Amino acid sequence: IEVKMSPTKVELKQLLAEQQKFLCAVCGDPLPRKNGSINFPLVDLHRVIPRTDGGIYTEENCRVICALKHNKDVHGNLGIEKGENPRLFALRMTMDDYRTAMRMEFAIENQRLAVLRRMNELSPELEELFAANLEKTRATKKFFKQRAELQLGLVDMPIVTALLGIRGIGPIGTAELITSIQIEKARYPSSLWAYVGYDKPAAERHVKGQKGGGNKSLRTAMYNIGMGLIKAQNEHYPPIYGAYKQRMENNEKTVMHRLPNGQMKEMAWSQVNPGRRHMAALRYMNKVFLADFWFVWRTLEGLPTPELYVNERLGHDRAVIDPRSRGWVF
Image 1: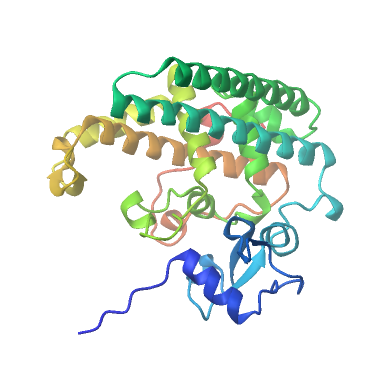
Image 2 (image 1 turned 90 degrees about the vertical axis):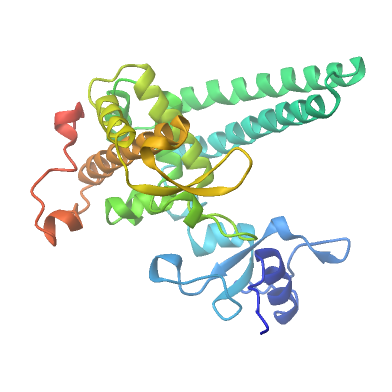
């Protein structure tokens, strides 16, 4: 029996680029090339039927587009000329630079650790190279962090004041949220969860050869925000984390768990690695926080805040979204 494998995103880009005669599907300009071949990082796959409507990465449902055109013309993510707050736009650009510097710092440190794992010790030349680059990268990251904090103070948006009023939410966490999320597109809290990547387990979100669902940078930001709430001993959200984690410690429901040797084994939640229970509880707490954040921001913007499905359709009377009782002032 012949099994037909789905093409990876890189293969799909190449296939569609050839079909489009190496022209952008939006503007008709030549697609970026490198050494005669398509420059994969500078082109995007655009789904004709979006993911929110069930669209997937297939030859029939995708077109190849210049990355800048994809962000600017298709999704409006770089739309300062379309009336976006210019100070928010400037903050978004600075936060992009901040994230880039942070990723470079992680890459250098990870490479240093990779060498140590192979060689146990670093040569003086490599040690000097890593140290110099880490120092420069950290200084750059600090520069963009300070610039972002200054620019945030110039952004006149009520949601900024509301976020900074939550114990454990600082300027960078606030900047991450307001520059990464377009709240008018999130019709429901579940829309926001799906955008972050909280709508399904990681094992279901990631498909080999394809980019994982959700916004990876925003998931990283949400991890830092969640840990900030816990470390600051916020009186409202950490108890949600603690209660969920305790339930998992006594939960005999089984889940597929990856062992240290890489094998997958079905285990009860009470038996899995404590780190996984920690991450599950943190994810649950962050979803509650994001639901409150969604309600507050949409309320401040005059956007509708429909009832949750579990309340409206399933008849649940327990309030999942209750920002005022959790310290939000708006």
